[in-house]
Amino acid sequence: MSVIRTVVAGVGSYLPSRVVTNEDLSKVVDTTDEWIVERTGIHSRHIAADGELTSHLALAAARNAIADAGIDAQEIDTIILATTTPDNTFPATAVTVQAELGLYHGAAFDIQAVCSGFVYAMTIADTFIRTGQSKTVLVIGAETFSRLLDWTDRTTCVLFGDGAGAAIVKGEQGAGTNADRGILTAHLHSDGRYKDKLYVDGGPSSTQSTGHVRMEGREVFRHAVVNIAEAISESLAATGLTADDIDWFVPHQANKRILDGTAKRIGLPPEKVVMTVGEHGNTSAASVPLALDTAIKDGRIKSGDLVLLEAMGGGFTWGSLLLRF
Ligand code: ACO
Image (cartoon, rainbow, N blue to C red):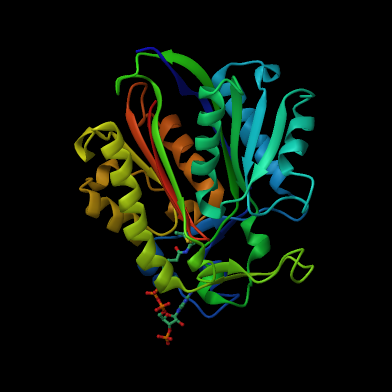
C-alpha cells in the first residue's frame, strides 16, 4: 500500500560559543564538579551571549539544516519552532526566522511543550505532510533557557544550557512497511496534574514577568523514566518492531541517569544511546535535534538506520517517535 512518509532530508544545529564549566558554576553557587557529574553526567553547557536571542540560534541551525538538505530555502512552506524561550511573548519566533530566511509564503508558528517540543513539532510536521497541508517543513527546537534560570538556585541552574537544532522534513512515497524511510509512528502525551512539578513562576497573564524555573527534581526523575519507557513501548507496539531493531536511541538530554535508566528499562545497550548531555546540559526543546545532528554528522547514524526519539518535560508532556533515517 503506497503511503506518504515524512522523511528527514537534512539536519543542522548551532551552539553559542561561550562554554560554562561546572568549575565556573562552583564560583556562582554552592556546588562542585563532582556533585554535578555524579548526579547528572553534565560537565559543561553553552550559554548565549548578551543580545544573542533564541531566533539567532534558531536561524543558524536552520541555515545549517537547509544546506545539509541541499534545498532552496524557498521550497519550505511551513516553519514549526519549538521553544519555551521566545524572543518576545509575541509574535512567534518562527516568523522572525521566516523573515530572515526571506520566506514570504506559507505558515510559521511556535509550539510550546517545553523539553518535549521537538518531538511534538516533528509529529505536527508529520501530520501536516501526510494530510497534504505541507510539503517541506523546517522543524526547529531552539532555546535560550539560561534566561529562565535563577542563578542563585543550585538545584536548577546547573542543569540547563542554550542551543538550537533543526531538521528539514519532506513528503516521500513509501510502501507502507517498516522498511520505508521516514517517520513510522509517533505518540504524544501530557498530564496537567503534574504541572507544578516543573514550571516557571511567572508569565504574561499571571505576573506580567518572565519568572524562573522551579522543579521538584526527584518527582520529575521518577516520572521521567516510567513515562518515557511507556511511550517507547507504544511506538514499538504500533509498528511491531522490538528494541533489538533500534539502531540508535536519541533521547531528550535531561540527565545521564535518566537516559541510562530508560535504556536499561527498554533493553537497549549503552553503545546505542546518543549522549550529548555531558557537553550541552539540558537544552530543552533543542536537545533532541542537537543530539540527532551530532550523531548524523559524526557518521554514527546512517541512511536506513532505525532511530528512536523521545522526550519528556514540564506539564508533564512526553512522547516518542520512530523514524528510519
Ligand atoms: N550542588 C550540590 N548540592 C546540591 C545541588 C548542587 N547543584 N543541587 C542540590 N543539591 C543538594 C540538595 O540541596 C540536597 O542537599 P540536602 O540533602 O542537604 O538537602 C542534596 O543535594 C540532594 O538533593 P536531591 O534533590 O535529593 O538530589 P537528587 O539525587 O534527586 O538529584 C537532580 C537532583 C539531579 C535534580 C535529580 O533529582 C534529577 O536529575 N531530577 C530530574 C530533573 C531533570 O532532569 N529536570 C530537567 C527538566 S525535566 C526533563 O527534562 C525530563
